[in-house]
Amino acid sequence: MRLGFAKSDITPRVGVELCGFGPYLNRHSVGVRDRLWSRAMAIEVGDRRAVIISNDLAGVSQDVTAGVRERIRCEAGLPPEAVVVHCTHTHSGPTTFPLNGWGDVDAPYMEVLPGRLASAAMQALANLQEAALHHAEVPCEGIGLNREYDRDAPPLEQVLQEDWRPFRPELTDTTCHVLSAWADGRLLGFASYFGCHPVVCCAASRYIHGDYAGVATNLLEREHPGSVGLFLQGAQGDVNTCVVHKAEQESLLALDTIAGRYARSVREGIRAGRPVAVDCLSYVIHPVEFSRRGLTREQIRERLAEQEAITQAPGASDEDGQVRMATVYAQAYRRLLRLMDEGKPLSRPVELQGLRLGPLALLGCPFEVMQTIKNEVRLKAQSPVPLVMGITNDLLGYAPDRTAARRGGYAADTVPLMLGILPFANLHDELVAGLLAVDAALRSPA
Image 1: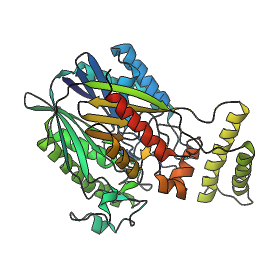
Image 2: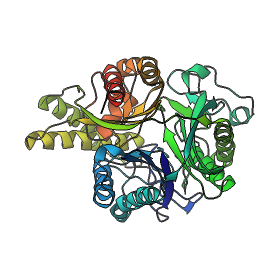
Image 3: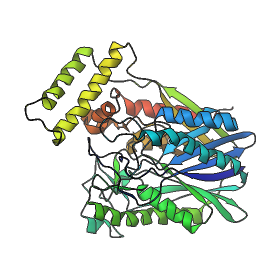
């Protein structure tokens, strides 16, 4: 096989609004703590080539992915199913997809972004060379805390102690997978896979960086000059870091500690990796029409009226968080009504994607996947090493497990509306089935 790596700087100019954490926060960046990168790994086995692009961004839309794929198709001849556009989901980068109220996109940045992502991929393809692929699964602890089912994060002085562990570690990832590429005893590049929200820095922080995943990857690249490292985000829909919602200076100081823990695990994975027999490279795109919770026009109008009663109440102020949240809902309901008036569909097929490298299967979806879903896929998949990747090729909010979906709230109900789509009806079961179908397709004869 041949492997190639490259990266492209995608750091925005200072002043762009950062993504996430609340409605209309006006969280504009004030400086660059660490630069953001688009990193690419190209693979060639026999007459087949593919490329994985990992970006220090919260996510990108399907339109951005289509633009990247079209550039690569024109320049390198790769079909869309051979191009994976993945994001680390940092909340300390620019808003790069339509997300009502959670940050405005910067138009000039978005104009140049697809070209920057495609540039990393094209250079990685140009850098293809004979190489050996190694794999290891190593302990990775003291980073995540399940925010849905575990206790709240303890005080900062506790979680920064090296022996800290969450109350229920089994509800988080406790290992990470590391792929490393070697040629003539030299590390060409690596990819680490782990599921945890990159939210060491939160609503109070205003500096641009890739959070713990980006800081750790930058550190490891400096330790191996000339190498390029990708971070592949796993199931993080219900897992935050142990440092979350702190003041800006506390967050920035903790960032190096959490990044150091993650870098230590990846470093061990690079050291402990063993050769992988890659006898095939296969890839597939599997569109799925997930069921949605239907709303009638009258129901939407009633809900819109409820939100407008808040925003139009005497003395309503844009400083009021309830008013800002009502604005998010009101705009979502108005958008759904416009789509109905124009006779346009309220949902579209969702793209699932798979890429197989010998025993390794990357199973990508555009969701923030909860741990229970990932665990079920891993248990039932045919591939020896199935890796469920979220935030791939698009961003459609959370994939809540059955319990979270029944409970409702932010993940199941609010985020879809923020994205201008209807909430899902049975995403746990349907996503598991879809990802297993992708896994099976990857193992079928071409």
